[in-house]
Length: 180
Image (cartoon, rainbow, N blue to C red; front, top):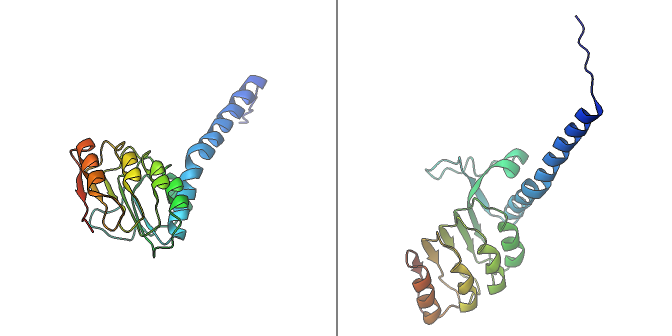
């Protein structure tokens, strides 16, 4: 028995449109996440995905497959620099990780202008910005994070009045900060 496939011009047009839509989705959503995860790894950071074990195991976090980088829902990122990091590059890349809930960007030279990118992470609940040169100007952007419940600002340049203002705007957020 022989099957013949007959394609009409309309069928080929629909198939082409579906393939084009898939490629547009890849370029528009998947590729920026892949680049962000690669930048995090290159900076010495760790990435945890939605299906990572809760017990803190690093087995899944160290999975560097291209599939995981592209399609895994990134939930937790840990970056600890030596004070010479490029906070502007990292923060711009992190902004595309819409499923991010927990972010630690310590000693990465994150400045006030870089915090604008972090304010686009709507699902962010825990944020650590230890030892970064952030001032009260950067705190204004963090007020746009409605789900934020824990913020660590140790070793930053924020003032007591800036922290007080942020506490008023985010009443459900515990802010860890010590006056120098």
